[in-house]
Length: 148
Image (cartoon, rainbow, N blue to C red; front, side, top):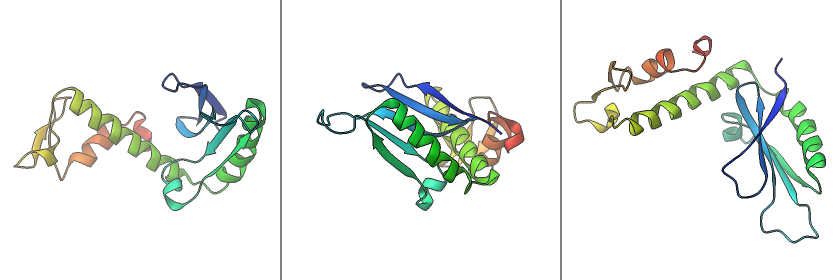
């Protein structure tokens, strides 16, 4: 069973840590921006797609980072008990799709849905169409092929 790990975000202006369970981003712990000094300075959110889209998520505030981390870890234990392997695989497929879509854009390729004939070429060289696009991404561009 994977352990929770934290990776500091370089995008945020304030201190922010993304929390991962293996390869799945399951939440964050960060300094709260723009709050008065006499309220909790740290916030945390626990949850990931697809479960968050079903209303399953948790979050809160804490005075210190250590308190926020402890609160997150307690919430994660409850949250994890409601997760299935299919939930984690759906997250991985969505991440692969998003990564592929931006790679197509960055390489200057159109998606088949952006072409009049519903066909295109992937940046990897494969011919793709709207019917086979999802299968191509899942079989060729998933970070870990065992999760197809």
